[in-house]
Length: 580
Image 1 (cartoon, rainbow, N blue to C red):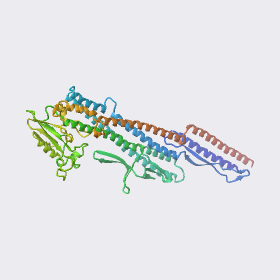
Image 2: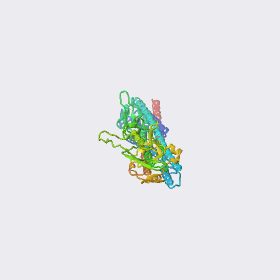
Image 3: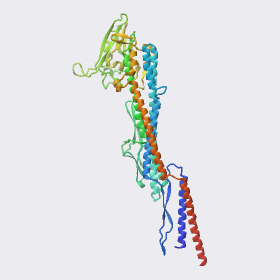
């Protein structure tokens, strides 16, 4: 080997050491950079082109490439773990917020308000509390239900806003990944790896995985494709944006995430199973909507059961007039009360059934009372066996108007109004059809659910009109209705699957509490798995400052040794020139 070859070997070692020091320095500079993958030089010996008597001697060292230290399989597992962790944490947060809104076992909760409401009826029956106190307690309960539903509705609105922001963030990340695909393809087209760009793309993919579970397919210079399920949302640099779709069905609004339609492609509904978006969609539907549905069921059943008892209740003086709370349009008054085309009644969460009720009309001066049964025909069969002749709002009005001593009309708002003629009063009894409650005649509550439940306005203004008595076996019992209403708290209802009104709510609250506990455990487990995978990635791709410092010292020594080789060869060359 010539002295020139020795210098070339030293020169290659200088270059390799210098590059290695730069790589180690870059690693140290990015030791705390999120998503950075440690880089290493791929050094290879340069084969010699001549042989010496002792054998072939190499021509130094070359740097083949600068590689990222990364485990692709581990990276994919970490991405999936990121989706699971984000979904579990988001689900736990949503359920915890619902549990906090319910506030059960606190000083002010719905269970306590229900107990206080029914207790007020019991105290009224025992004449230890006034009618005004019962009305006030009912108003307090109604306000509490409306406020609680409003809080849950606000949480749903907040989730809707978070979904919109998450979809927008996902689109930003997809656009960023598409740009990085182009940049990486352009940079690596010349055969040199674009490690920083790949790190940036991996970071964007990891952040996208927090939004939704994704499948990533690496096509080399063609970039990466991203799929949600089997639907492609990114193919190289071709991006299909996501959108949040709102669909309204009656009073309900549902949300879904889909691929935006283009001029050449139809939109595709996505069904992510992981990530924040999936958890927000699931939490909105299950935790929020489910709890609101339970609250609405409780409120509507409370309205029906209390109104059914209060409408057939009476006071010693009887009624001289009552106006229903349900407005019926002129067109619907001639339709059957059970007709699905009757928009005034078909949208209600409760309905009248085949049966009837009693009307008792009393002559105020003599006390003489006459009972009339009003039949409610809702069997869908006519008396002649042909088409249906079911009861309509108009036929009911006519039947009531025909009762001696009564006058029945519709108000301008379409509400059924019943008045006693001069010298008479009246009351209702034994309603097997539920029509009195549906129409809101002599009702206690107004509304249909948790959003609009309220105590009848004229009761709030004149609590003395509260009906607390009832006729039992033809005898008037002054506190009969109050006793029955107080017992409603412990009454199992077929409409609630054999549960009481309080039991329905208690089961719902316990379900939320159990879901919170399960979500907490799941979130902790997912976090542990994620942290374990992060530790594995850090061991493979993370920068160890101590190791890099040692590498710097090694490459520094190598650089010094290479310089010494060149210096020695130069001295020998100078000596040779002197001799010559």
